[in-house]
Amino acid sequence: MKRKLTLLAPAHDVEVAKAAIQAGADAVYIGAPRFGARQAAGNSVESIRQLVDYARPYGVQIIVTLNTLLTDQERKEAVTLAWQLYEAGVSALIIQDMNLLLEDLPPLRLHASTQCDNRTPEQVKHLEELGFKRVVLARELGLKEIRAIREKTSVELEAFVHGALCVSYSGRCYLSEVLMNRSANRGCCAQMCRQRYDLLDASMQEVRDDNGKPIHQRYLLSLQDMDRSLYLKDLIDAGVTTFKIEGRLKDKEYVTNIVAYYRQKLDNLMPSLNAEASSEASVYNYGFVPNPEKTFHRGGITYFLQEREQSMTSWESPKSTGEFIGTVRKVGYNELHLNLQPDVKLHNGDGLCFEDKGFAVNKVDGDIVVPNVMPDLRAGARIFRNKDTEFERSIWAERRIPLTLGIQETETGFLLWAETTGRRSEYAVDAPHEPAKNEERALQTLREQLSKLGDTPYIAQNVEIKTPPYFIPISQINQWRRDLIMRL
Image 1 (cartoon, one colour):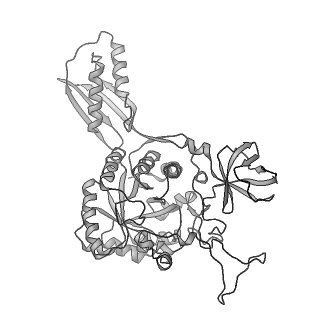
Image 2: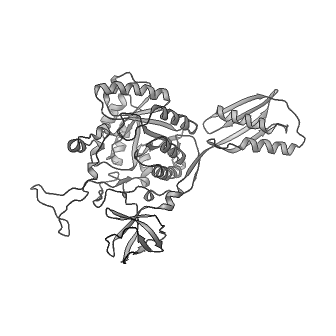
Image 3: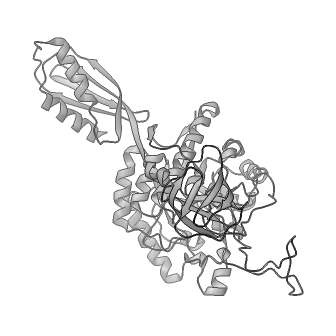
């Protein structure tokens, strides 16, 4: 039996969720109207219901976050919301507050949020015994620690593979609440780790860098982003079955790009691992070549997966730096002459940056750039591109589920069927068996009309005609096909 692997994508709203599904997500996690760990990413129950309907043909699960800590009054409201989400058809809830287990929850799968501090076999085993079906592992765990958890538990294991990192362990941050009265565990983090700080020693004296300069007003707590795309097989071997992308505040272009990138990585791995996607087998058409450096990107680290990395922070900027494109060769009066990396082509409107400063490209001629505002740069400065206008325009993905369609003769009419790798739908109709005058044309018309799946989620991979060449009006064939697909 093949292992089921799940690529789990974030969604700020329904439109982003739909983009994630088209790009290849097996499941999507999204915030409810309240009680999600991203206060700015809430969605109405009705919009989530519509998303469930959209996702159903693809076999994609919709998972909802109810993962803040709750007051007693809020706990009652959360239970009511959980029942509404159950009736809307969601697949699971991600929770942090263990008091919810004392309530009358609907019969939904529960997933333990990473904020439950899931870092030891004992903790994960405890959550399994409490009834959780999946545990979201602490980001800080290495492969050895994940294997130890797998050996002593049977619950599903979910691990983050891409996206922003919190400097606090498992996202259990209290800095925002202490300094700004905004609790990260209540969904309103003030992003204190993305602010500037001075570095002082234990005696409150300035610490100086290798050049003797005080480390002053630098982004000392700003971690680079996680990128474990080269270690998916290692994670699978360690026991992980769900691969989570962070980013419920990211835009549609980012989510499409990153989901497509990991979809291709996983699909290339699965045949050799006797594994398959947990959603419907699909074919994908991308209008672009996925590249994590082309959308929001702070650099990429594996974050303790193998061992502690020497450099995990980005002191220069907490913003998206994007891709390294080259260095400054010469600074002119109103233009920059660059030494560009091979295959880099700049476009008008691109966004370039160095350290935490940025500028737009007003005009470009090969490796000569005219900025909208002339930056204070010197020869040798490293330049990054954090907005590639041509790439962003090309971001487009389409997902289709391959179908085998068929029709055969019955005593009173015909039997039609449609089949995917996981489902089959049949539709019997009463109709006369009227011999066709042009037999070859009749069979060709039947095949063509059954294959016209239009804007449905499906594509005709194979059409099996097991009936003599009868005359059937095109309008009748089309109606049968529509009814058959609705049943599927």
